[in-house]
Length: 230
Image 1 (cartoon, rainbow, N blue to C red):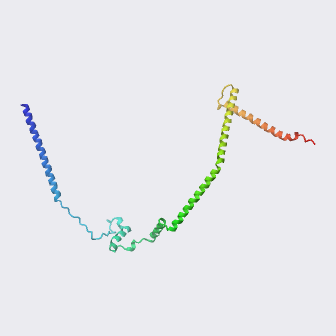
Image 2: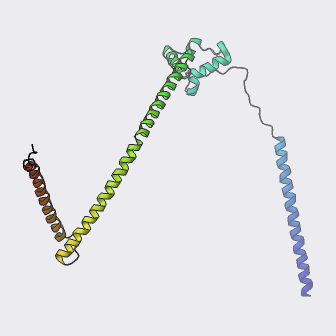
């Protein structure tokens, strides 16, 4: 009993849904047909364009665009309609200042053949002079190269020798400071610096005495030499 009632209700629901979908299809087709009928019956009014009469803008009107009030636009109108445009041909001709400017621009961008050839010749001459000067400079530097290399090597040898002497001197001073104070001294300490200043002072005094002795020997030397035998 319950099963039969469920089946009958399901069948009724299916029929109802089918009727609803059919009604929607009918409505959509009807609205589509109405839209097609309206489109078919539309008759727009044609544009009324007067292509036979020429268009000459009124320069005194505020509605006329500024670009239609220029000489450039007047030239276009005169080229299109001729004298019928009502434009004075003399007003389209450039002024003396404009002509001079045009001539200057023409000479600058399109110079005569003779001027172009002269300019090319001057540029080629300038390039040749620059190339010759560069070649001379390279040749002079190449000639100086052996001496420059020898000087560089000599300076490098002197710097290496000086560094070696300075290292030996520093090692000797540290050893002497250790012997004097009985322990290794920091080369930046005041004691070490004071000892170095004292030693330099003594060394300077010794060199001064040796220089004086050499000078005295040179003065006394000729007097000690005995005269040659007759």
